[in-house]
Image (cartoon, helix red, strand yellow):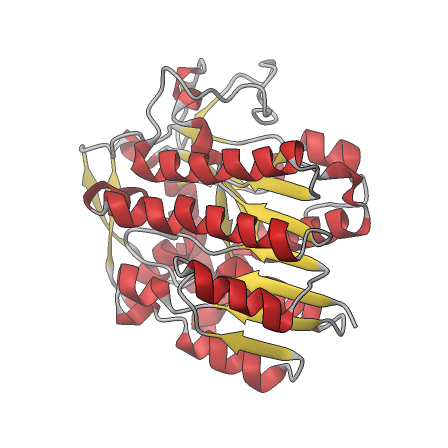
Amino acid sequence: MKRLLVTGSHGLVGSEMVKFFAKKKWVVFGIDNNTRKYLFGPECSTTPVGKELKLKYTNYSHINLDLRDFPKLKSIFKKYGPFDMIGACAGQPAHEWSTNHAIEDFELNASTTMNLLEVYRQLSPKAIFIHCSSSKVYGDSVNSLPLKELKTRYDLPKNHKYYGGVDESFGRLDGNLHSLFGASKACGDIMAGEYGHYFNLPIAIFRPVCITGSAHKGAKLHGFLAYLVKCIATGGKYIINGYKGKQVRDNIHAYDLVNAFWQVYQDPSGSYGEAYNIGGGRSSNNSILEAVTMAEKKLNKKADIEYSDQTRRGDHKWCIYSSGKFRKKYPKWNITFDNNKIMDDLCNLYKS
């Protein structure tokens, strides 16, 4: 039977990957130590997710491990490997959290990636390796685009070449602000690409903007859509920071992201250090104002909104990245969760 190792297996992407491959009768091993609870508090604990996975899938095994522990990580590969596929889905995901926890942020995003890549190279080099990165590796370069302020959002003119989304060549390391989070993610991203190119290993790198889904444990510091819906559903106050709430985000459901991983497994010729922007594009994006309006309608509740003129440092006015490179290589992949279906998925959690 095929064997999969997933890091961050109780998180949004990791748990979706566990479900996806467990349903395909793979033997799935998941590494998770509930870092999300440490980062964002008890309400964001992923323990219930882990219990559900173990109860539902007998072919899933959980491993409690801190990925910073290189010797123990190596022992896991020796005990359970070699693997057919590895999903690197763990990490520190929050822009603001990184500012006051720079060393830990670097460890959780860069050092752990390095540990995983090196153990993989030594003990399971034939596995298809998926590195879940972030569009934050490009910094705030998108803010240099000729954006127009419209009624509910910032957007590009329809005749602009990047209207459908920014491609991989637009991003740059110099001359823009990344945040410490973006920089630590860039370090892991670059190392994953280097291992793929230098050692000729089947490593594919994905750079989504906002990943979402009903399994997301949304928090004030991370999880834009999930947290917004949670606030409206429970009567909590939601604070909009800067840009009048017109900042736009590309959203991809975790299922569609994991399905992209599956496409690479079936045809690994598109890996070996290749990096892909991945997201909902024009099928799934919204501004904060638009998301509030949709959630209010679906939940039949009025949002408690507070506006702040203080823009988050390094925040993006508009973030839609093109998946064209990935679609060209993997034409069978498509978005199954458009903007409306994503909002239904998030809101239905509270309706039930």
